Length: 186
Image 1 (cartoon, rainbow, N blue to C red):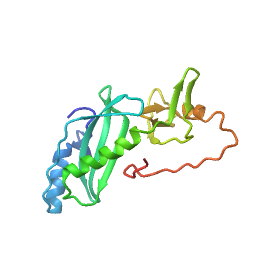
Image 2: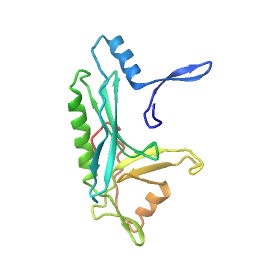
Image 3: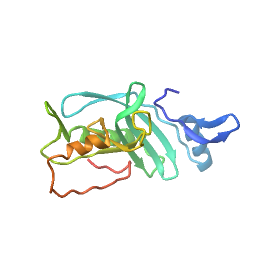
Image 4: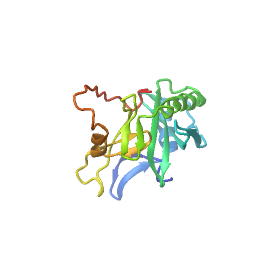
């Protein structure tokens, strides 16, 4: 299983954590629920952002108690990074092409937007003064405090870098909303 594909953690054994591949996990869940379900496989798809940059998306489909979840994500340096979109359909028997089309529609809507301009003096908010993206928590050597980071326009920004984006906004009001990863924020 490639490093960017998630397995499902099913607990620990004496030899360490036990993971199941997505296809095996989906098969077990479908059998337990008594429904026919075949894990769809999709080839990577390249979409273009507002600046004309290509982004290659990989797909993962997971059967869960709430329905079926599809994830469209970028792989950078062999790891999941950059843009990441999800769609949850409550009908586990939905056509797989509906899942693919819905998550790609969400991706296209977000890729068409630009929230940060890169200027000679650094990153700045666009005229919309709006930031949409994803919160990530990455405790690592590069982030020993474990502070949240953000993926905005497919680029990782530290807490401090997002603070720098807000320089010059003193006195303005703001509204911060945290949404479920399966919600459409475009």
